[in-house]
Image 1: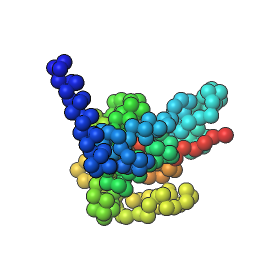
Image 2: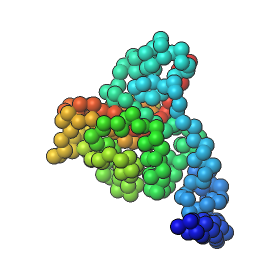
Image 3: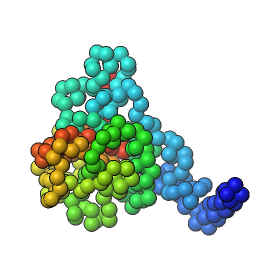
Image 4: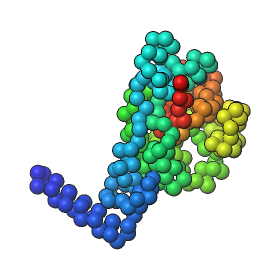
Length: 250
């Protein structure tokens, strides 16, 4: 076995070199030539450029807090969560929806790069250990069937498959809504109000449920889904999001 590893490494190096010369594939995020195409459609530089959300952060939504001084004054919660506590009790994200992470999410979501689901899920598991601890199931945010047919896959469902907890399609989208990204923040809650319902024959009574999505901006979609699950009897609803538009507290 000791001799096999160098052989595999040399073979991989040769394959990467051949692919780079013959096909000249570009990184799906930065569009620079891929030096190691066999490692996936995103280059190592882009993965390394992701800026994680690190403490201090809001204990509820995961938004960064400006300093440790706020922890003692504000009970470790951001101003938005103190003002109106969300229905999602605990949420974490890999990083802010900007820079390299935004480019990777766009490649995954709109470039049909479904192979990115596994490495994105690995980063979610790393930052969301607390969220997944004791969870009974992970529930991907559903797409309307027409949008899923158009896109070819549900990006949240692809990520959920690799999180290590049972994946259950416990929600169904009842109507197609305009993209949240195309709406001002003031209209996003109304846009998704009543847009979800419990899936038939799925029981969530007294269970801890983790919602999974690729991007969260105002949290309106997560809140709408959490409301449905809590009404259906879920004991607690948490969330894991790949990227979130963070609220910068002065």
